[in-house]
Length: 134
Image (cartoon, rainbow, N blue to C red; front, top):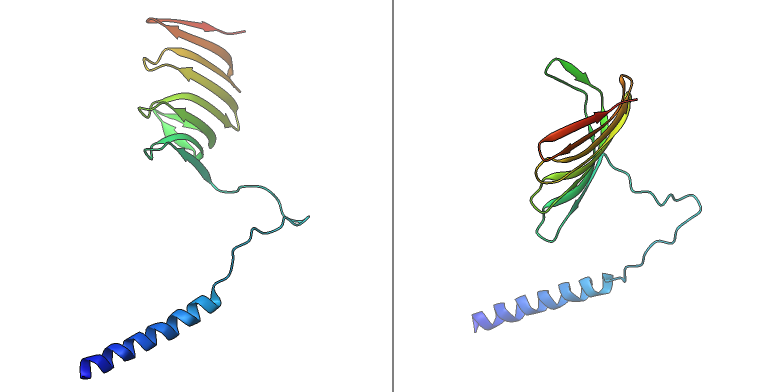
């Protein structure tokens, strides 16, 4: 008898809670775009992943670094990678210039860069490398 009273009490409490929650249930609507709203996605980086969760495209801001005694400025970098995670397309922009790199899985391809020190087109194929400069 005591168990039945407890069960009835718990059922009554559940019904009250369910009624309150359903009364608050509202339909979600998209906001109407106002003249002052900007249709812009903002952030410090963007990553696009494939169906397996691997990053296949990214836009990021690389901080300034010193590598092998050479200073590299802050750079905006767009990377497109293949299914194995290797970057095959890179486009970069920095205060001293920009570059584009298109390579295959064997690191053969084309590198175009233009910066304060000059411009060049580098082509690499089957172990041979050719550099064109103005």
